[in-house]
Image 1 (cartoon, rainbow, N blue to C red):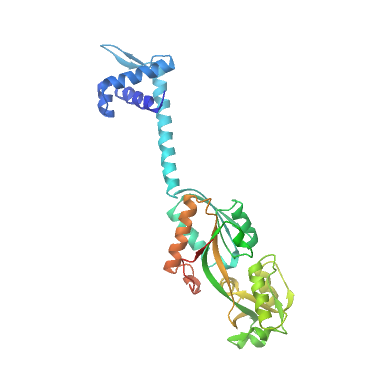
Image 2: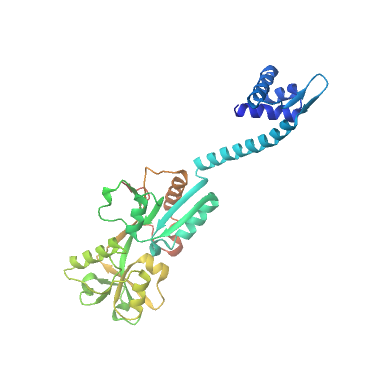
Length: 316
């Protein structure tokens, strides 16, 4: 017995006629009769009482007609789901991200993704850059929006550069530097600095240290908190000068603080990372949407952040 037998039986049982069922299925009537006979032989019971005067389903045939309808409907729905999944319209997307650098666009991006693919289940994981890289490499995340890491070339992952975020200092509005539009890194030589802990953002931390060393001084790090929000709180309390990216300033900086550019310009990249060996349709659909928004300049326009990177800079 196979699905063909069930489809043929369903047509005969609904039409209560071999000739009408054969016409509906567009097959020869003898082939249809043989298929129903084979089904009855496989089941070891009569499904249809038929003679010259009557044509009716047996009690077993009536039950089989109901169950066949259920089976075929479920099969059709399963095939529709398979097709939707293949097109990226159904399935699961596990997205890792780091907070402040993605705050200006992530909500809008996911809203658009859900509108296009409402049957895809989206799961979000906010973690440190190191953690999301590890989770993507181990297959626990589909995609991540994060910072590059030292030694990442050893992993078989791909990245797309989303933006290079410039670094600047954050000071209270009453600080002597608050009225300046720009300062040099050297001007920070004797200032207590508030810098995100290296374990929470190795790329950001190392870029700041490198900038200070190129300015020929060793930074005086007063505090190294685990959250960028805590960096801003320390600055607001007068504990030192904070160093952050412009995305932090745009997303979460209090009005009592001032954001001042530093020369020479230093920046930290924001990238999308994924494992090309685990390339499901929902993941591809998300990557395509990111690329589309990059080309259209929609990732950064809401908060006035410049789209200063090209969307086609893909590396492995």
